[in-house]
Length: 373
Image 1 (tube, one colour):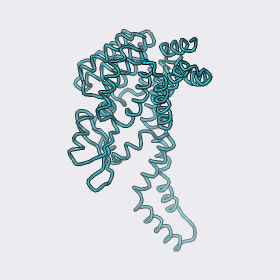
Image 2 (cartoon, one colour; image 1 turned 30 degrees about the vertical axis):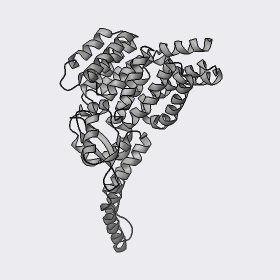
Image 3 (cartoon, helix red, strand yellow; image 1 turned 90 degrees about the vertical axis):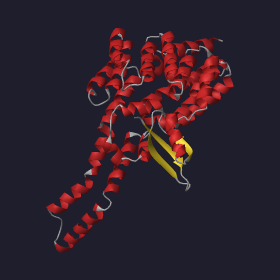
Image 4 (cartoon, rainbow, N blue to C red; image 1 turned 90 degrees about the horizontal axis):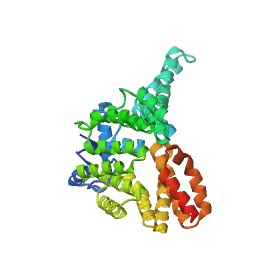
C-alpha cells in the first residue's frame, strides 16, 4: 500500500512527521487527523506515493531514515546530500568515536608515536567520507536523476540509453513510461504503445496513473485531443484524487480549451488536502488559467509568486527546473499581452532553449502572436 509523508502538531504542541499507509492522500490525511494531529502538511502526492510503492518494501530505508529525513531529502543538491549523509553517519558513530579517541590517547601515552593500529582507527573514522560521497554523487538515485535530466530536455536517445542502464534497478513501469515517451517523440509510436500495453490492466499500477502516463505519449506527438481524453478518463477513474484533478485541469489550460471546466476542476482541487509542492505548482496552473481568461495582471502575480517559491526548490530537481522554464515562458506571454515587451523578451529568451528542446509549439506560437499585437 502507498506510504505518505505527513507532518502535524500533536496534543503537546510539537511537530511530528510520520509515514502513513493509505490507499490515497485524502485518506492518509483523515487517518492523521483521527490520531489527534492538527496543522497538517502533506509532503507526498498520490503519484509520488504510488511510484515509491512500486519499489516494494524498503526496510533498510525505513530503518536508517526517519519520515522527517525523507522530507528533507526531497530537494537537496548533491553536495547538501553528501553533508546530510555525513552528519547522519557520524551521529550513528557518536558513541564509538570517543572510545576510539580514548584508546588512541591512552596508547600515545604508553608508546611514542602512532603505529599501524592508530592508522587503522583513523581509517575507520574517515571511512564514512568516501561512502557518503559515493552515495551522494553516484548512487542509484543520482543515476535516475540523469534519466530525468535527459527526459526534461527532450534528449530522447539519452533517455533510452539511461533506461537500459537502469533495468532491474528502477520499477519496470517507471522505465517503460519514460522510454515510451522517448519512442513516441522519435516517431516510433507503435513501439511506444507496445511498451505501455502490459500496464493497461496491471494490478500494481493504478489505471489513473497508466492513463496519465499514456497522455504524455500523445502530448509529445501533438495529439492534444487524446491528451485531454486520457485525462478525462483518469478523472472518471479517480475523481477524488487531487493529482488527477489538477493534471486534467492543466491539460485543458495549456491547450486553452474549456477554461470554465478547468476553473471548476482547480476549485475542486483547492478544497482538498494538497501536498506542499502541488500547492505551490497550483499557482502556475492557475496562472495559465488566468492568462486564458485574459486576466493578465492576476496571471502575472501568480507566475511571479510561483517562480519566487519554486526556484530555490528546483536546484536539484530536473522536472521542477522544467516547470520553472515553462512558468517563465507563460509569464513572458502575459507581459507581451500587457505590452511590457522588454521584460517579456528577456524571460522568453531564458526559457527558449527548453521550449525548443521540448517542441512547445503552443507556447512559442502564443508568444509570437502576443508580441505582434
